[in-house]
Length: 185
Image (cartoon, rainbow, N blue to C red; front, side):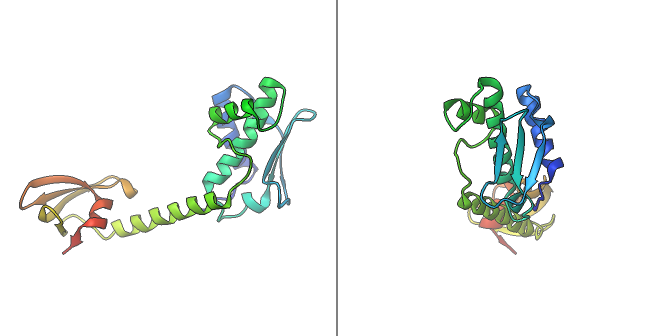
């Protein structure tokens, strides 16, 4: 899924985190900058504020999981500042990360972004392959032999197929598994 993370989208995630923590981070100013080297930052000076880089947050190829982790990472800094009056990447910050679901590491990792994008592309390819199947199709299972798809239920990669096999009767199988392991006849 291609997302652009504008201030409204960032604030929505922070509102969710506020509901989880009882804090008010979503009410702080959020500034989107042209910075290339700092993806996000919580500034604990004065009344507090957040900054996020448009280079990343406006990039449709930046993985949603990375954007969410960055927002949660900076929120954990805010939370640590509010609860303990300190900042950094120490033990209390890591505890805050655990509470808000942020990865307790300092820096963005490009390989993680690639991992999430590859997982998403793989899921999209699988879903596209599942569209080839419909009720009444005949398949050849490696163990059960010939079967006919009676019903397909669910959505996306979670679809299941009720298949009537000549040898063992009705079986419910993951349609993704059928796509990967059976032959369509």
